[in-house]
Amino acid sequence: MSYQKSISRRQTRALRPAALVAIAGVAVLLAGCGSGGATVGSSSAPTSSGMASECGEVPNIPPNFVDGADAELTDATKELFSGYPGPVRVSPYADMEAKPGPWRIGFSSFAPNSAWVTNLFQGMEDAFQKAKELGLVEGELEMSILPDAATQTPADQIAGFQSLVRDGVDGVIMLPIAADPLAPALTEAGEAGIPTVIMGNTSPSEYAISANPLNIAGGTAETIKALGGKGDIVVVRGMQGAAAETYGYDQIKTMIDACPDLNIIGEINGNWNNATTKTAMQQFLVSHPGQIDGVLQNGIMAQGVIQAFEQVGRDVPIVNMVGGQAGDLSYFADHLDEGYVTGGSAYNGNQQAWAAMRILLNTLAGNGPKVTDIPIQVPVVTKDNVKSLVPEGATLNDLGDPLGSPNDFAPQSYLDQFFTTTGGPGKDLVE
Image 1 (tube, rainbow, N blue to C red):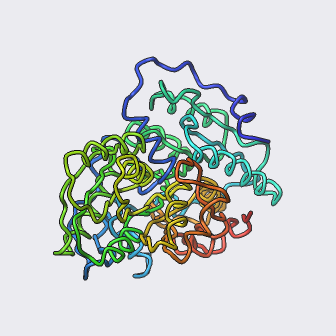
Image 2 (image 1 turned 90 degrees about the vertical axis):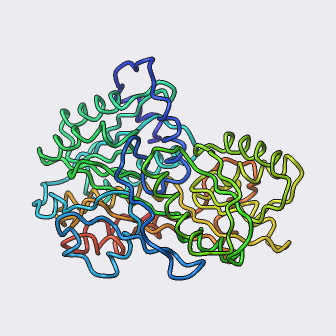
Protein backbone atom coordinates (compact mmCIF):
# COMPACT_ATOMS: atom_id res chain seq x y z
CA MET A 1 0.00 0.00 0.00
CA SER A 2 1.35 3.41 -0.92
CA TYR A 3 1.46 6.21 1.60
CA GLN A 4 -0.88 8.30 -0.56
CA LYS A 5 -3.68 5.79 0.02
CA SER A 6 -2.93 5.58 3.72
CA ILE A 7 -3.38 9.29 4.22
CA SER A 8 -7.02 9.05 3.24
CA ARG A 9 -7.71 6.66 6.12
CA ARG A 10 -7.51 9.48 8.63
CA GLN A 11 -8.41 13.06 7.90
CA THR A 12 -7.21 15.68 10.32
CA ARG A 13 -9.45 18.60 11.18
CA ALA A 14 -9.67 21.62 8.89
CA LEU A 15 -6.52 23.68 9.01
CA ARG A 16 -6.33 27.24 10.26
CA PRO A 17 -5.44 29.96 7.75
CA ALA A 18 -2.98 31.58 10.17
CA ALA A 19 0.03 29.36 9.49
CA LEU A 20 3.33 29.68 11.24
CA VAL A 21 5.88 31.08 8.82
CA ALA A 22 8.70 29.19 10.51
CA ILE A 23 7.14 25.80 9.80
CA ALA A 24 8.16 25.88 6.15
CA GLY A 25 11.78 26.22 7.15
CA VAL A 26 11.48 23.40 9.65
CA ALA A 27 10.03 21.15 6.99
CA VAL A 28 12.90 21.99 4.65
CA LEU A 29 15.45 21.00 7.28
CA LEU A 30 13.82 17.67 8.01
CA ALA A 31 13.30 16.99 4.36
CA GLY A 32 16.92 17.31 3.44
CA CYS A 33 19.10 17.06 6.43
CA GLY A 34 17.39 16.17 9.63
CA SER A 35 20.50 17.17 11.43
CA GLY A 36 19.87 17.28 15.09
CA GLY A 37 16.37 18.59 15.37
CA ALA A 38 14.17 21.30 14.01
CA THR A 39 13.02 22.72 17.28
CA VAL A 40 11.31 26.06 16.85
CA GLY A 41 11.66 28.39 19.78
CA SER A 42 13.81 26.04 21.86
CA SER A 43 16.85 27.21 23.80
CA SER A 44 18.23 23.79 24.62
CA ALA A 45 21.04 23.70 22.07
CA PRO A 46 24.52 23.86 23.58
CA THR A 47 26.80 26.80 23.04
CA SER A 48 30.20 26.51 21.42
CA SER A 49 32.08 25.49 24.55
CA GLY A 50 34.26 22.73 23.16
CA MET A 51 37.28 22.91 20.93
CA ALA A 52 38.64 20.60 18.29
CA SER A 53 42.01 19.26 19.40
CA GLU A 54 43.51 20.25 16.05
CA CYS A 55 42.41 22.11 12.95
CA GLY A 56 40.25 19.79 10.87
CA GLU A 57 39.31 17.54 13.78
CA VAL A 58 35.75 16.85 14.96
CA PRO A 59 35.14 19.04 18.05
CA ASN A 60 34.30 17.65 21.44
CA ILE A 61 31.39 19.73 22.69
CA PRO A 62 30.20 18.22 26.00
CA PRO A 63 26.58 17.03 25.94
CA ASN A 64 24.10 17.87 28.66
CA PHE A 65 23.38 14.64 30.53
CA VAL A 66 20.72 15.37 33.17
CA ASP A 67 20.52 13.64 36.58
CA GLY A 68 23.05 10.95 35.76
CA ALA A 69 21.50 9.90 32.46
CA ASP A 70 24.90 8.75 31.26
CA ALA A 71 25.41 6.33 34.17
CA GLU A 72 24.43 3.28 32.11
CA LEU A 73 26.28 4.36 28.96
CA THR A 74 29.77 3.28 27.96
CA ASP A 75 32.44 5.88 27.31
CA ALA A 76 32.23 5.14 23.59
CA THR A 77 28.47 5.70 23.60
CA LYS A 78 28.80 8.94 25.54
CA GLU A 79 31.12 10.29 22.83
CA LEU A 80 28.34 9.88 20.27
CA PHE A 81 26.44 12.70 22.06
CA SER A 82 29.16 15.33 21.52
CA GLY A 83 27.45 18.63 20.76
CA TYR A 84 23.99 17.12 21.14
CA PRO A 85 21.34 19.87 20.73
CA GLY A 86 19.37 19.32 23.90
CA PRO A 87 19.36 17.74 27.35
CA VAL A 88 19.65 13.95 27.54
CA ARG A 89 17.61 12.38 30.35
CA VAL A 90 16.90 8.94 31.74
CA SER A 91 14.05 7.43 29.74
CA PRO A 92 10.86 6.60 31.67
CA TYR A 93 10.60 3.56 29.37
CA ALA A 94 13.85 2.04 30.67
CA ASP A 95 11.88 -0.29 32.96
CA MET A 96 8.69 -0.54 30.93
CA GLU A 97 7.39 -4.08 30.61
CA ALA A 98 6.70 -5.46 27.17
CA LYS A 99 3.28 -4.64 25.76
CA PRO A 100 1.37 -7.65 24.44
CA GLY A 101 1.61 -7.84 20.66
CA PRO A 102 1.07 -7.71 17.82
CA TRP A 103 0.98 -3.95 18.11
CA ARG A 104 -0.95 -1.19 16.41
CA ILE A 105 1.32 1.57 15.17
CA GLY A 106 0.48 5.21 14.42
CA PHE A 107 2.39 7.70 12.30
CA SER A 108 2.02 11.49 12.67
CA SER A 109 3.61 13.99 10.30
CA PHE A 110 3.40 17.37 8.66
CA ALA A 111 2.51 17.49 4.95
CA PRO A 112 4.96 15.98 2.45
CA ASN A 113 7.07 18.71 0.91
CA SER A 114 10.16 17.07 -0.59
CA ALA A 115 11.72 13.89 -1.91
CA TRP A 116 13.14 13.22 1.56
CA VAL A 117 9.71 13.30 3.23
CA THR A 118 8.10 11.34 0.40
CA ASN A 119 10.75 8.64 0.76
CA LEU A 120 10.26 8.65 4.52
CA PHE A 121 6.52 8.09 4.12
CA GLN A 122 7.06 5.17 1.77
CA GLY A 123 9.78 3.83 4.07
CA MET A 124 7.34 3.90 6.98
CA GLU A 125 4.86 1.81 5.00
CA ASP A 126 7.57 -0.63 3.90
CA ALA A 127 9.02 -1.02 7.41
CA PHE A 128 5.53 -1.56 8.82
CA GLN A 129 4.73 -4.23 6.25
CA LYS A 130 7.99 -6.00 7.04
CA ALA A 131 7.15 -5.88 10.76
CA LYS A 132 3.72 -7.30 9.91
CA GLU A 133 5.34 -10.20 8.03
CA LEU A 134 7.33 -10.89 11.21
CA GLY A 135 4.11 -10.94 13.27
CA LEU A 136 5.12 -7.87 15.28
CA VAL A 137 2.31 -5.51 14.22
CA GLU A 138 -1.24 -5.83 13.00
CA GLY A 139 -3.72 -3.99 10.80
CA GLU A 140 -2.42 -1.10 8.73
CA LEU A 141 -0.12 1.78 9.61
CA GLU A 142 -2.55 4.32 11.10
CA MET A 143 -1.57 7.70 9.70
CA SER A 144 -2.36 11.27 10.64
CA ILE A 145 -0.80 13.44 7.95
CA LEU A 146 -1.48 17.16 7.70
CA PRO A 147 -2.72 17.93 4.18
CA ASP A 148 -1.33 21.42 3.51
CA ALA A 149 2.20 22.63 4.22
CA ALA A 150 1.12 26.24 3.71
CA THR A 151 -1.39 26.31 6.57
CA GLN A 152 -0.42 23.52 8.98
CA THR A 153 0.17 24.35 12.64
CA PRO A 154 1.35 22.47 15.73
CA ALA A 155 -2.24 22.52 17.01
CA ASP A 156 -3.34 20.57 13.94
CA GLN A 157 -0.66 17.95 14.48
CA ILE A 158 -1.57 17.67 18.16
CA ALA A 159 -5.21 17.03 17.26
CA GLY A 160 -4.28 14.27 14.83
CA PHE A 161 -1.83 12.71 17.28
CA GLN A 162 -4.41 12.67 20.06
CA SER A 163 -6.88 11.03 17.70
CA LEU A 164 -4.40 8.21 17.10
CA VAL A 165 -4.01 7.76 20.85
CA ARG A 166 -7.76 7.73 21.47
CA ASP A 167 -8.18 5.11 18.76
CA GLY A 168 -5.91 2.75 20.69
CA VAL A 169 -2.51 2.62 19.00
CA ASP A 170 0.28 1.06 21.08
CA GLY A 171 2.97 3.48 19.92
CA VAL A 172 3.51 6.38 17.51
CA ILE A 173 6.30 7.53 15.21
CA MET A 174 6.28 11.26 14.56
CA LEU A 175 7.86 13.73 12.16
CA PRO A 176 7.14 16.83 14.25
CA ILE A 177 6.46 20.38 13.13
CA ALA A 178 7.92 21.78 16.35
CA ALA A 179 8.99 20.46 19.73
CA ASP A 180 7.66 22.65 22.53
CA PRO A 181 3.94 22.84 21.56
CA LEU A 182 3.74 19.08 21.07
CA ALA A 183 5.47 18.11 24.32
CA PRO A 184 2.38 18.04 26.61
CA ALA A 185 0.53 15.69 24.26
CA LEU A 186 3.55 13.35 24.09
CA THR A 187 3.80 13.37 27.88
CA GLU A 188 0.11 12.57 28.32
CA ALA A 189 0.37 9.66 25.89
CA GLY A 190 3.58 8.41 27.49
CA GLU A 191 2.08 8.44 30.96
CA ALA A 192 -0.68 6.24 29.53
CA GLY A 193 1.96 3.78 28.30
CA ILE A 194 2.02 4.89 24.65
CA PRO A 195 5.58 5.79 23.59
CA THR A 196 6.35 8.19 20.75
CA VAL A 197 9.52 8.10 18.65
CA ILE A 198 10.23 11.48 17.09
CA MET A 199 12.59 11.93 14.16
CA GLY A 200 15.17 14.66 13.58
CA ASN A 201 14.24 16.61 16.67
CA THR A 202 14.67 16.96 20.41
CA SER A 203 11.73 17.33 22.78
CA PRO A 204 11.07 18.89 26.21
CA SER A 205 8.97 15.81 27.00
CA GLU A 206 10.87 13.00 28.67
CA TYR A 207 8.29 10.65 27.19
CA ALA A 208 9.53 11.31 23.67
CA ILE A 209 12.26 9.05 22.29
CA SER A 210 14.32 11.15 19.88
CA ALA A 211 15.88 9.34 16.93
CA ASN A 212 18.21 12.14 16.00
CA PRO A 213 20.75 11.99 13.15
CA LEU A 214 23.79 14.24 13.72
CA ASN A 215 25.39 15.14 10.43
CA ILE A 216 27.42 18.34 10.79
CA ALA A 217 30.82 17.68 12.32
CA GLY A 218 32.21 14.76 10.34
CA GLY A 219 31.50 16.21 6.91
CA THR A 220 32.68 19.68 7.90
CA ALA A 221 35.94 18.24 9.23
CA GLU A 222 36.55 16.62 5.85
CA THR A 223 35.84 19.94 4.14
CA ILE A 224 38.30 21.83 6.34
CA LYS A 225 40.93 19.19 5.55
CA ALA A 226 40.24 19.73 1.85
CA LEU A 227 40.84 23.45 2.43
CA GLY A 228 44.13 22.66 4.11
CA GLY A 229 42.82 24.43 7.19
CA LYS A 230 43.23 27.87 5.64
CA GLY A 231 41.61 30.39 3.36
CA ASP A 232 38.83 32.97 3.17
CA ILE A 233 35.43 31.41 3.78
CA VAL A 234 31.74 32.28 3.96
CA VAL A 235 29.41 30.72 6.52
CA VAL A 236 25.79 30.07 5.53
CA ARG A 237 23.30 29.85 8.38
CA GLY A 238 19.88 28.20 8.40
CA MET A 239 16.70 29.26 10.15
CA GLN A 240 18.14 31.20 13.08
CA GLY A 241 16.36 30.60 16.35
CA ALA A 242 15.85 26.88 15.74
CA ALA A 243 17.83 24.60 18.04
CA ALA A 244 19.22 22.63 15.10
CA GLU A 245 20.49 25.84 13.51
CA THR A 246 22.28 26.86 16.69
CA TYR A 247 23.66 23.34 17.00
CA GLY A 248 24.99 23.32 13.45
CA TYR A 249 26.39 26.84 13.64
CA ASP A 250 28.12 26.12 16.95
CA GLN A 251 29.70 22.97 15.55
CA ILE A 252 31.00 24.80 12.49
CA LYS A 253 32.15 27.86 14.43
CA THR A 254 34.02 25.71 16.95
CA MET A 255 35.84 23.98 14.11
CA ILE A 256 36.73 27.29 12.48
CA ASP A 257 38.02 28.64 15.79
CA ALA A 258 40.49 25.74 15.92
CA CYS A 259 41.99 26.86 12.59
CA PRO A 260 43.84 30.19 12.94
CA ASP A 261 44.36 30.40 9.17
CA LEU A 262 40.64 30.16 8.35
CA ASN A 263 39.20 33.63 7.91
CA ILE A 264 35.45 34.25 7.87
CA ILE A 265 34.80 37.05 5.39
CA GLY A 266 31.03 36.95 5.71
CA GLU A 267 27.93 35.19 6.99
CA ILE A 268 24.67 34.93 5.08
CA ASN A 269 21.28 33.47 5.91
CA GLY A 270 20.05 30.67 3.67
CA ASN A 271 17.11 29.72 5.90
CA TRP A 272 17.62 26.01 5.04
CA ASN A 273 16.24 26.70 1.58
CA ASN A 274 18.27 26.36 -1.61
CA ALA A 275 16.40 29.10 -3.50
CA THR A 276 16.91 31.53 -0.62
CA THR A 277 20.54 30.47 -0.32
CA LYS A 278 21.18 30.99 -4.01
CA THR A 279 19.77 34.52 -3.92
CA ALA A 280 21.63 35.49 -0.74
CA MET A 281 24.89 34.05 -2.06
CA GLN A 282 24.54 35.90 -5.36
CA GLN A 283 24.00 39.17 -3.50
CA PHE A 284 27.07 38.52 -1.38
CA LEU A 285 29.21 37.75 -4.43
CA VAL A 286 28.24 41.03 -6.08
CA SER A 287 29.62 42.97 -3.13
CA HIS A 288 32.63 40.69 -2.55
CA PRO A 289 34.53 40.24 -5.81
CA GLY A 290 37.64 38.91 -4.04
CA GLN A 291 38.81 35.35 -3.61
CA ILE A 292 36.54 32.92 -1.75
CA ASP A 293 38.19 29.62 -0.91
CA GLY A 294 35.33 27.83 0.81
CA VAL A 295 31.74 27.92 2.01
CA LEU A 296 30.52 26.14 5.14
CA GLN A 297 26.76 25.65 5.56
CA ASN A 298 24.86 23.79 8.26
CA GLY A 299 22.60 21.60 6.22
CA ILE A 300 20.82 21.13 2.87
CA MET A 301 22.02 24.39 1.27
CA ALA A 302 25.06 23.30 -0.76
CA GLN A 303 23.08 23.12 -3.98
CA GLY A 304 22.01 26.77 -3.72
CA VAL A 305 25.58 27.87 -2.96
CA ILE A 306 26.98 26.09 -6.01
CA GLN A 307 24.21 27.40 -8.27
CA ALA A 308 24.95 30.96 -7.14
CA PHE A 309 28.63 30.76 -8.06
CA GLU A 310 27.80 29.24 -11.43
CA GLN A 311 25.09 31.83 -12.07
CA VAL A 312 27.53 34.74 -11.67
CA GLY A 313 30.28 32.97 -13.59
CA ARG A 314 32.71 32.46 -10.73
CA ASP A 315 34.71 29.35 -9.87
CA VAL A 316 32.91 27.14 -7.37
CA PRO A 317 34.93 26.95 -4.15
CA ILE A 318 35.08 24.05 -1.73
CA VAL A 319 31.56 23.76 -0.28
CA ASN A 320 30.74 21.41 2.57
CA MET A 321 27.86 19.10 1.68
CA VAL A 322 26.38 18.25 5.08
CA GLY A 323 22.79 17.22 4.57
CA GLY A 324 23.94 16.24 1.09
CA GLN A 325 21.33 15.61 -1.56
CA ALA A 326 21.40 14.13 -5.03
CA GLY A 327 22.02 17.51 -6.69
CA ASP A 328 25.06 18.77 -4.80
CA LEU A 329 26.54 15.30 -4.38
CA SER A 330 26.32 14.81 -8.15
CA TYR A 331 28.33 18.02 -8.60
CA PHE A 332 31.01 16.63 -6.29
CA ALA A 333 31.09 13.30 -8.16
CA ASP A 334 31.10 14.95 -11.60
CA HIS A 335 34.08 17.17 -10.71
CA LEU A 336 36.30 14.62 -9.01
CA ASP A 337 38.42 14.22 -12.14
CA GLU A 338 39.06 17.98 -12.08
CA GLY A 339 40.46 17.70 -8.57
CA TYR A 340 37.38 18.98 -6.72
CA VAL A 341 37.43 17.60 -3.19
CA THR A 342 35.20 18.39 -0.23
CA GLY A 343 33.32 16.60 2.54
CA GLY A 344 29.74 16.10 3.59
CA SER A 345 27.17 13.76 5.06
CA ALA A 346 24.17 12.05 3.55
CA TYR A 347 21.21 9.89 4.44
CA ASN A 348 17.70 9.52 3.04
CA GLY A 349 14.15 9.47 4.33
CA ASN A 350 13.80 5.73 3.81
CA GLN A 351 16.72 5.09 6.14
CA GLN A 352 15.27 7.38 8.82
CA ALA A 353 11.91 5.58 8.68
CA TRP A 354 13.32 2.10 9.24
CA ALA A 355 15.55 3.31 12.09
CA ALA A 356 12.56 4.88 13.87
CA MET A 357 10.50 1.73 13.45
CA ARG A 358 13.27 -0.40 14.97
CA ILE A 359 13.46 1.91 17.99
CA LEU A 360 9.70 1.83 18.58
CA LEU A 361 9.47 -1.96 18.23
CA ASN A 362 12.36 -2.44 20.66
CA THR A 363 10.61 -0.17 23.16
CA LEU A 364 7.23 -1.92 22.86
CA ALA A 365 9.01 -5.26 23.33
CA GLY A 366 10.26 -4.09 26.72
CA ASN A 367 13.93 -3.77 25.76
CA GLY A 368 14.03 -0.44 27.58
CA PRO A 369 15.71 2.63 26.05
CA LYS A 370 18.24 3.89 28.60
CA VAL A 371 17.93 7.56 27.63
CA THR A 372 15.47 9.90 25.98
CA ASP A 373 17.64 10.59 22.95
CA ILE A 374 19.42 8.31 20.48
CA PRO A 375 22.00 10.06 18.28
CA ILE A 376 22.37 8.39 14.90
CA GLN A 377 25.69 8.58 13.14
CA VAL A 378 25.30 9.72 9.53
CA PRO A 379 27.67 8.50 6.79
CA VAL A 380 30.44 10.99 6.03
CA VAL A 381 30.80 11.81 2.34
CA THR A 382 34.33 11.79 0.91
CA LYS A 383 35.92 11.57 -2.51
CA ASP A 384 36.12 7.81 -2.01
CA ASN A 385 32.40 7.14 -1.56
CA VAL A 386 30.50 10.05 -3.11
CA LYS A 387 29.75 8.24 -6.38
CA SER A 388 28.05 5.42 -4.49
CA LEU A 389 25.60 7.93 -2.99
CA VAL A 390 24.51 9.62 -6.23
CA PRO A 391 21.42 8.25 -8.03
CA GLU A 392 22.02 7.32 -11.65
CA GLY A 393 21.60 10.30 -13.97
CA ALA A 394 21.43 12.91 -11.19
CA THR A 395 22.57 16.46 -11.98
CA LEU A 396 23.17 19.57 -9.89
CA ASN A 397 19.57 20.74 -10.23
CA ASP A 398 18.04 17.48 -9.00
CA LEU A 399 16.04 17.64 -5.76
CA GLY A 400 16.11 13.95 -4.86
CA ASP A 401 17.58 11.96 -2.00
CA PRO A 402 21.03 10.37 -1.89
CA LEU A 403 21.27 6.60 -2.11
CA GLY A 404 21.65 4.48 1.02
CA SER A 405 20.28 1.25 2.49
CA PRO A 406 18.22 1.25 5.72
CA ASN A 407 20.08 -1.92 6.69
CA ASP A 408 23.23 0.16 7.23
CA PHE A 409 21.59 3.07 9.08
CA ALA A 410 21.10 2.55 12.83
CA PRO A 411 20.85 -1.25 12.61
CA GLN A 412 20.09 -3.22 15.77
CA SER A 413 23.81 -3.77 16.38
CA TYR A 414 24.15 0.01 16.74
CA LEU A 415 20.93 0.56 18.68
CA ASP A 416 21.76 -2.11 21.27
CA GLN A 417 24.06 0.27 23.15
CA PHE A 418 21.09 2.53 23.95
CA PHE A 419 18.81 -0.23 25.33
CA THR A 420 18.87 -2.05 28.66
CA THR A 421 18.24 -5.37 26.89
CA THR A 422 20.00 -6.07 23.61
CA GLY A 423 18.80 -7.97 20.58
CA GLY A 424 15.35 -6.45 20.31
CA PRO A 425 12.89 -7.21 17.49
CA GLY A 426 14.56 -4.48 15.44
CA LYS A 427 17.28 -6.97 14.63
CA ASP A 428 14.97 -8.72 12.16
CA LEU A 429 13.67 -5.51 10.61
CA VAL A 430 15.82 -5.37 7.49
CA GLU A 431 14.84 -4.36 3.98
